[in-house]
Image 1 (cartoon, rainbow over the protein chains, first blue to last red):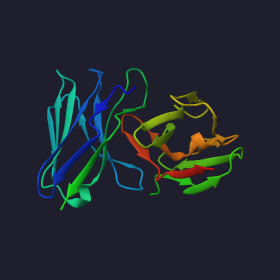
Image 2 (cartoon, one colour; image 1 turned 90 degrees about the vertical axis):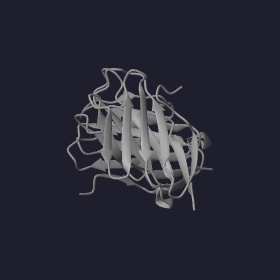
Image 3 (cartoon, chains in turn orange, cyan; image 1 turned 120 degrees about the horizontal axis):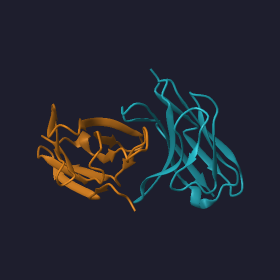
Length: 112
Length: 111
């Protein structure tokens, strides 16, 4: 099973906010990542957050990190149909060099 | 800047045939990876190479072999393809906590 956990599916209406949640395992992780996979494509790095930060904002994206609960979230404001994709969170496992452990992915469906 | 290039993009094999999936990166990354992605299973690590000259098994290595030909190239070989190996295969590379850069994937069907 996966150590990084995400819910499988989220459906929102266009213009609403989306919140995708992730729980991770390693409290010593230095970075935590969000990747986006559009249909038929590979994963692309969307954003990341340093573990010494609680929040990072980048245009419509807000990443929140709760280190006490090992909880990471990605909020997409004013969600558009082009945001429909699978979103993966990822953390570096301990003592594993450059490797990442990925969650199972959350499929975001945006309805017009 | 090409990033990570995978070939081929699509392939159909008959059971028992062999093939090699190619992957090359131009970012001078030390580490390279091969994943498979199946519906409802997320990404599963097949093999990885932490640095040139080393390879290690991941979560699902059975039925596969890899070669880290040089720093740029990391190939995945299926010696005797089985229908259970029908999947989408992704190569990725990484370095120094920068996260992964993924290729666009190879869609393999084994009939």
